[in-house]
Length: 173
Image 1 (cartoon, one colour):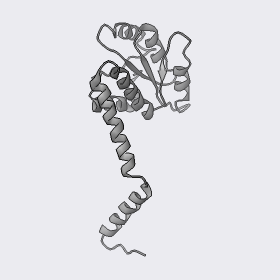
Image 2 (image 1 turned 45 degrees about the vertical axis):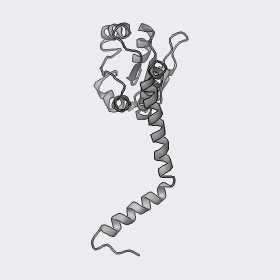
Image 3 (image 1 turned 30 degrees about the vertical axis):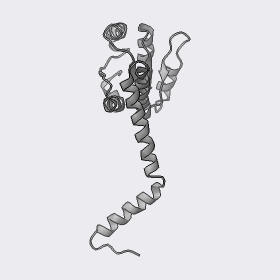
Image 4 (image 1 turned 60 degrees about the vertical axis):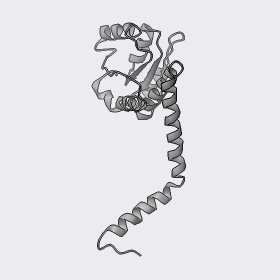
């Protein structure tokens, strides 16, 4: 991620990878404040055994693009929501890479971080069956969760009734 403040978004990628059993590392590497570190990190990532890089960046969001320029590993860019433009600036910066230097661009914010972890797992699943299986299990659980609660209004009213029933002194119409 480009700065420590990006962790609020990127922690969702880390949690998702951890839940899926995919090893990962987290690191702050700024395209603007530590460019030499970024060059070193990205150019040595493959030698260190990394196979996919998820790069979260806000504002000008150069981190994913510069990382992609320094390695042939797949780079998944997560636009961090910014205060000024709500992440649209980040999204456009990451998505508008010149031909020849691809960056997979995710949604802005938390959803993008989660999806980056899921896409990284799918990429790794091509080679590692345990990650493919973890992703299948995730998808199955996701489906079961939706099917278990097809009408959220019933759950909400049931919870409200249960709370009201258990509250002493409350009268019902």
